[in-house]
Length: 427
Image (tube, rainbow, N blue to C red):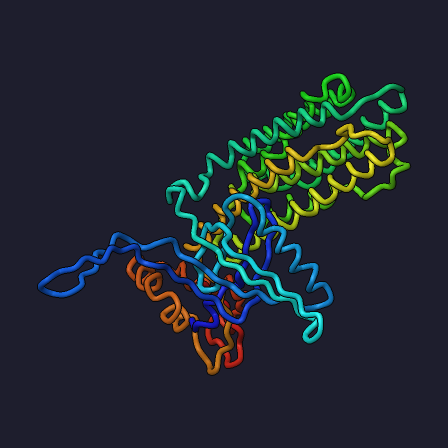
């Protein structure tokens, strides 16, 4: 694989979860050596090295396009956030960094369609290496804690004074339960244990759904248990991605004007919908941290989805809370609040750090066009030499079958790959 093929699109993730792709003409890194110079009468000066300093990564970013100034300013503000952040360098390394010097330059005469921002990232060496990547068990614990808090906040934000309001919230809860059944139940068929568990919890919620106002915490907690079942039993990333992302998008409600919140039933509906959208977001984290990844691109796609979904959810929550306060003239918290957003950001960043670390050991997808006729055996020997040798020794055809499956080869192509054929390999 050439140098160009090995290059990774560089990006930075702030402590609060903002992801910024870094556009720059060059990237560099360096360090200084901590040393003491002593005089040696026999040999002149002698340097005693005590160790290298933290690496530094100076980057001169370029922002262009209609929103170049706003994009640069958003990055500038994110650089002020406290805490350790993640830096993906173009040559493959992932570093935990803090922010050093930052300078933002606007052109007011020439080049007004471009903004420049220079910054220096400094490798974070204050945390032991074995603690930098949050473990699977730690992330799972974080998500379970978030589940309990989300269920409790939902229970505290709904209220009912009339029969009509009670009917309204029961209907909203019922429709969302059916949505979970539609999106998640089809992927729980991998094991009978998963099917039994999902069906049992679903039926129990369904039978007690009229108690959503008297026992909101109990039902909310059961919803949390229900949505994590596929994440616990299914390993296929593609299935988990499709199920949880479609559930999240379907759960996220519309934006409403202030007058909508003058009606208590409508307020309850938005609170309920926000709870289910938050539930889907947590489920997505659980699914992605449990998933099995076969390629680097899959793991990186998971990080993209998590960050985009988080921004979509938190933007909605903040907008609706602000609209509610403006309509009612009160600072009352009617929707899942800032503490949830911050704790969710921590869980997502931990998940992303784990996935980025995992991606370093995964193969990259690489496609090329045959310049002459070839065979699957030639492809195996060139791109999977060790696997091919092992297959010959074990007298099986696993690697050849893999080439056939990943390229969807016809019977004729299995015998002879024609010149011009696009081939996909993982290296």
